[in-house]
Image (cartoon, rainbow, N blue to C red; front, top):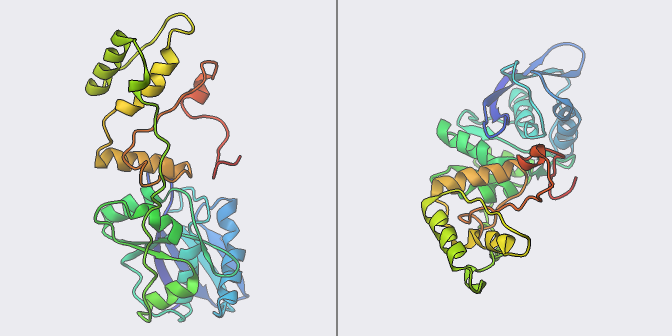
Length: 289
C-alpha cells in the first residue's frame, strides 16, 4: 500500500492534540517532503529517519515520499514524530504488514535505530488514554507514564524491537518500575523550638488550604518556618499527583516514586522578577541550559 496513516500527538502546554502522520509514496524523482507546519527539529527528521531505517536493515524506498502532519495549522516541534514517520514509511512500502490504527507512537530516532526519550510523556499518555489507544513510548518515558491508572502502554528501545512486536513475532521488554530513590525530606516542624503561635498558624493553613503572609524583622524565623510548611501538608491525591507529574514532565524533570504524592515546594528569592516568579526565563532540559 502506498499510503499509511499513523497516529501521534503534538505538545501545546499541558495539552496534547492528536496528529495524524500521513505517508504517501508516489512515482517521480526520489525525494522526501515533510509538510504540516513543522519546525526545524521536525524537518530534520528526514535525515534521522532515513539513517535509522537503513542502519536497522530496512530498505529506504526509492520513491517520492510525502509526509503530512495533520492538522496543517497546528505547529509541530520536537523529535517525537520520528518513530511515527518511520513506521509510516515501512507500512507504505510494504515492509510492515500490521494494524496500526489502535496505537499512538512517540519517540526520537537515533541514526542507529535506537528510540530515544522525549519530553512531556505524561500529557501525551493522558490524552492517549482518553482516546482509548495504546501508547508506545521510549522505554525511559514508559517508566514514568506507567503511573497513570489503567494505562495501556508499551515501551521500546529500538526500531527493530517494535517492528517485531507489531508483526506479533516477539513481545516488547517489560517496563521497569519507577526508580525508588529516596526523595529529599523537607525539614521537620518539630525541630522549631518556641514560635507556638506561628506553628499553629502553619498547621491551620496546611489543614484548611489557606494562604499565608509572613512579615517581620530579619532573624525572627520566617524563612525557617516557611521551609517546614511542606512537611505538614497533606499528600497529593491521585488526580493532583497526575497534574503535578504532567507539569514536571513538560519541564523534563521526572518524578521519583517517593516524590509522586509529595507536594512540590518552591523557594524563589525575594529579589526575583515577576516573570521569573511565574516560571519565565531560560528553558532548562535535564538541569542544563
